[in-house]
Image (cartoon, rainbow, N blue to C red; front, side):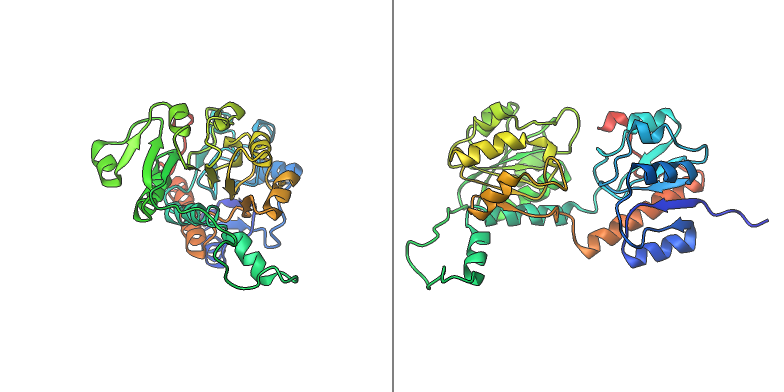
Length: 333
């Protein structure tokens, strides 16, 4: 008797090599048009699938999970974060949740460092000036489009996990002084290697930093971690960079401070109501006060393929009756 392959529903278009391997191993239902699924489509997917492979754009909440069929036993998310999934509800229904940690660390840290450089040095403004239709750039001038030096400045990293530490390694090479706030202090050996200063109080760290980089996950505890009150603690000369999740910052408060000149600038790769972008942020970007990117932090071909391979390993391991390597539990969030 031929064993039935599990029905694996994939919600978005994945790299060809990943989709091909999924078709070889599973009865994979692919989304070749890459049209995001609405709630009705997600409900149909959880009703029929043995395994659901969502991405961070798919909200798998309790309302969707309440419609899950008896066969759904695994949600193998194509993502590092799992804030789009109600993990507790899934586990209560006997559904295992996995993610793809570790493979995006270097890519996201590269993008973070790019924004740390781009915002103070006004790189986006400069690039636009060169290609503008009007004669905005008339050649080199000793006083035109002056930015700020990053060498010797203090960088405060919020969230010193894999990505935070990778950012610290890069920033140290650029002459930045490394400070960090984390749920738990790093081992002494790692602190010494990074030459990093730990702050138990986030408020005290923020008041002293020249650049703040957000590298923590979005959880109920980190929602608006950079609140209006905390943003007010930053120096007017400070910059904010976020490549984690938009919900960690009170975006309206950040926008108000940028408009009022109470912050020097911001570099954002994520947004609180993604994919919608606050029109005020767009206006600030046109004024050169912020750099906005369309969630490119992990957008490398190598990274996407690595994510897909992790998803496949998690599915194969689970279907073989073993604990998948990247299982997510509520206590981990």
